[in-house]
Image (tube, rainbow, N blue to C red; front, top):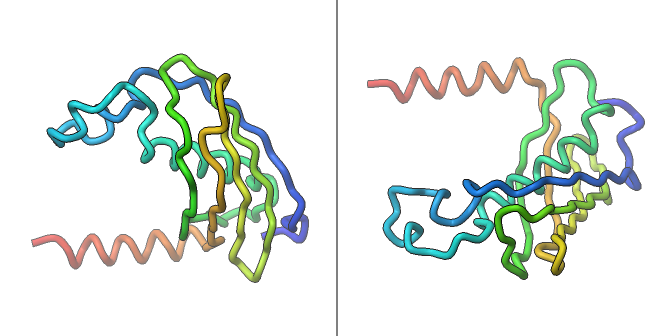
Length: 141
């Protein structure tokens, strides 16, 4: 992690929402989700906001560094329909060791759709890959 990764960094990302990011597409095997309206699913919204945070800091990581989401505290305030452009603004508000906190806000053409905070941890990709390989091996029958 470079010393340029510090509070105050900002980033804006725009995302045009496709048809397949709606609630019925989130877990199609769920009958409850299948009958929901064709609006942005909260699960996909979280992923879009995480993506913006990852983009915000990518130039401030050392080779071999990776960030992983560790906590989300986000609202979902308004529906978003396919074809809408979602604008996500993120700001690094805290850097404590290898822990990062972002303030996030997302809006479409009609309203603010989300605001809140997201925490990510900076980890060594090689060590993380080794850990998940061990877990996968232990999980196999």
